[in-house]
Each structure stands twice: as C-alpha cells, then as structure tokens.
Image (cartoon, rainbow over all chains, first blue to last red; front, side, top):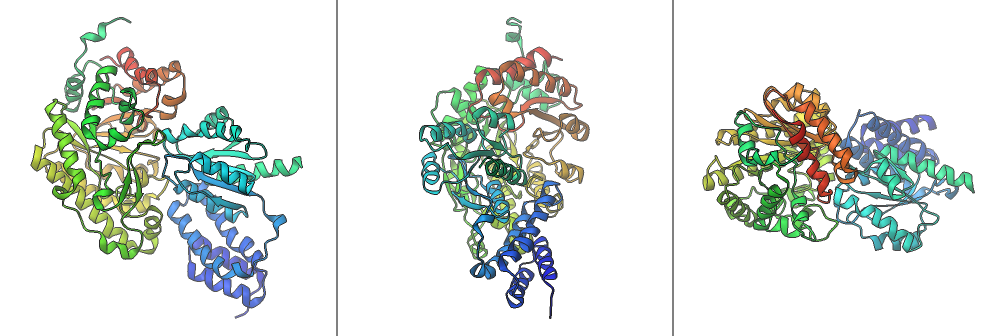
Length: 221
Length: 361
C-alpha cells in the first residue's frame, strides 16, 4: 500500500498517542520502505505524538501509565529507525544530566521528565536515583551538560539540594551550567532561595523550563 | 498566655475522647510525625528508628511528651511490605534518607509473578518485630497504637512487591497480572490484621494506611476505580469485621478526581473514620464531603512547616484550626503529609500552640 509522507508521519503520531506499539513498528518499517527521512519520522511523527501526550498530561487528561504506554510504543519505532538516523547536531537543543538526589529512590517523575526531554530532542544522561553529589560533579566534568536536573520527593532529600548547589560551586563546575529542580515538596520559592536557575511543577513544565534556558543561552551567544 | 494548658486533658485521653465522639477540651494535634521524633531525640539518622521498634516507640512517646501533641504511637512495618515478600530494602542510616527504601522489588518481570506467594505473617521476621513493638507500646498504655496495614492499593503493590514502572504499564498490557498482584497484597493485609488481632486483640490498636501511588498524580480515577478500589473496600471491611474500631487513611497526593468520581466515599472507614487528605484537597471540601461520617484531619503544608518562619506557620495552623474545629464529627490539626523529619521544632510547636490558643471548645 502506498502512503504519502504526511500520512506516514500522522500515522506514527496516532500510533504513539494510542500507545500502539505494533502500529509504531509497522509504520517505522513503512518509513524505511518509502524512503522517508528516519530522523524526520522520529521528530515529526513519534515525537509529535509524545508532545500531544505531554499536553494531555499537563491538562490532567491522561496520567503516568498512558505516558509510559506511549513511550513504550514509540520505542518500538525507535528500535527500527535508529540505525538509519543521522542526527543533525545543530538541531539538538541541549544536553541534560538528570538524577534523583541522594537518599531518595522515587524516580517516576524524573523518568517522565527524561522521556519528554528526549522526545524534544535533548541528549539526556540519566544518573538514576539515590545519586551521590560526587557522581553529579564527575558527570558534569566529563559531559559538560547545559543543564543539570535534580529531583526529590522526600523533604529530607530535598534538603540535600542546597548542599549540592554548594558542592557544585566548591567544585567549580557551576559556571556554564543551569541547575533546575523539581519534585513533590519543591517550590519555586525554594528554588530561588537555593540559587537554582529553574523549577518545574511537572514534567511538561520541566521541558519548557529547559527550552527557555537553552533559548536564553543561545541568544546570549 | 501562661501555664493554663497544664490543666488540659491528657493527650491520649483527648484522642480517645474524640474518636469515641465524646467532648474534648480543644482541637487535638496529630502532626503525622514519624522521623521527626527520632530527630528531636538526637538520632543522627532514621536508621534505628525504622529498624528497631523499641527505639521507635520510645522516640514517639517522648516527642509527644515534649510537644504536648495528641498523636498515638504509629508503627510502621520494618519490612516495609517489601522484605516481607522477598524484596530488598535499605534502612535510612544516611542522613539524607527520610524513610525505608525499597531497593529491589520481588517482581521485575511477568515470569517473576510465579515467585509471588502470600506470606504467612507468623513466619515473617519483620512481622515478629512489628508485634513486639506493638506489645511494647501497649505495655506503655499507648492506646490505641496505630499500625500500618498495607494491601490492595497500587501503593502497597507497586514498588514494594512489583517494580513500579512495570506495574503501571501492566495496567494496560497485562491487567491479569495487576489483578493477581493486587489480590495477593490485599490478602496479605488481611492476614496481617488477623495475626495481630489473634495476638493482641482488637481494642488496643487501629489500622492506618497511605496511598500516594493511587493518587491522580499518577493514575486516572477510572483505573483507581477499576483496580485498587474493590480491594481496598474489602481490606477495610475486613478490618472492621475483625472488630477494629476504625481506619486512619492518609490520602497522599492529589485525590480530587477520585473524590469527584465518588470512589473515596465507597471505602469503609468505620464510624467515624479518620480521614486525612493532603493539601491538594481543601480542608473545606474534606469537611463538606466527608465530615458527617468521619473525623477530618489536615492540612498544614509540609514545605511550609520545613521552611517558613515560625510566625507564618503559626498563622497557617490558626487558619486551619478555625476552618476545621467545628467539623461535625471532629477535627484534628495535622501536617498535610508526614511531618518533615527536619522541620524546625518551633514550627512543630506552632501546631500545638495554635490548637491551645484557637482550638478550644
């Protein structure tokens, strides 16, 4: 069956929104058969679907299982397309290091942020949960990210965030990176108090905060 | 000001009077304090508090005496309903940790479900420790002691028994596994209650539970109604059928859509129950919707308790008390979620002081 490029991209979007992994795989194969640019298929087909899900999540129309289901479906397309994708580095919006701070094992929020950042084109280095300060510092030195995202659900681990900010300053890795924070007990006021550069109440907002940081950074250069 | 409060009711007398529907002198204070009790006792971390229930009971008793609050001793299961099933936990011996952590759930794959067998509480070491802690609290006349009973919720199944992200995907991809695992944790909750009732009777303790992962931050009200709700109804009814007086349920996270869908009304709480929403649910809404059948608890913002100046916290407590004190079945001023372990003691005292100043009947 013949499809136009637009039909293929729309079908990928719909398949991701529906969380239909089989359809994602099917149209990923069609992408290759019809000679559509695989990078374009990922960004304007699959990622568009995740953007729709992100908007719905933001409005309270869908919840975490639906986001995970869509991401799971999208991964089936990515597996097929990835070997053929040539990434245009000028189009990568930025590099982000993410982690749940030490003492905290609640990572579902961080995982959703990671999914949404990746589909927005960011390179994400996920340090996981219960991450010690020194691991953040070592990763910042090795990877030179644009943004470091810290997450905490417990008030005890949230209080590790100002300590991390001090550690970043003492280790001289703070310059050139923006630090954003989020998680259940975290507030905008707290973010400002500890000198963070951004704060998001939920995952879609975290992406918007990163976009703004990168927009300002690019504008400054 | 002054020392008039020295003539107040004894905290445990006040708490018991309220749950029996008798007259109390003022709004009780139930700060939902766990780790904070260890902190004010000078423990450098919460490891011993959560792993050794004799330490736990002692910290809670003395913290109550220090502050003059009305919270009965609240006992957590040192196996965290994770090690009980064969999962791996870590006690919070590092200062940044706020509670026990589930390091690895038993079930990571669908195939692992075959490993899942409902434990016999009488053979689970953490249950022996819980029972010893309960007996100790009873020996100190800590009546009723609140005991964490967990089963049938997504919160009591995902993370502790089944890996969380897998479980959330299975809601769509493998609902049979979801149903099976929820049934099994509900059954364990039932067995734990039977075990404790057989050992110490049903008049010395009451069950409490919490449900953050069942909130509508994570799952839709449709899924809540379809999956955990039928089990939670059965679990709560089982507790009441065993003669336990009531449930204290902390509806952690945003449960507004679950409330609006009529799900929360269906959960048997006892008459009255102890109904505690976090501050995403306005106190006025809790009272209007549930206050005719339940004692309402709430709702002092936890981040404020941790970070705001004393005067601001005191004013926040005052506003909560003035809104809640005339709830039909009674009201207790409470932190919106667990009291932050490192909350400044003066901010915690603000709850007690505001109850004395503005909560008198």
